[in-house]
Length: 99
Image (tube, rainbow, N blue to C red; front, side):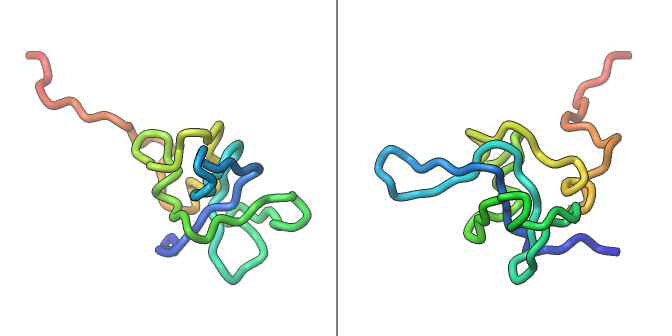
């Protein structure tokens, strides 16, 4: 089963920039496919009290590379796995190994 390509973000909270122009997620973030009422890990959005961010793609909230990951405290591991992230995947790569 392939991960969805157009997953957006649902989060436990939100914050806006000082100019009140841009809304970003904060707290625990989940992957969410628009036009559905649950996250990829199975949490219902309305019952869990999650806020939808259809304008932010899943890749933008990853702490290592994301633009909107400033206030993200935790990424749901089940949603990350559903999006194709592997548990044993390393975030670094050795470029000059020792002999």
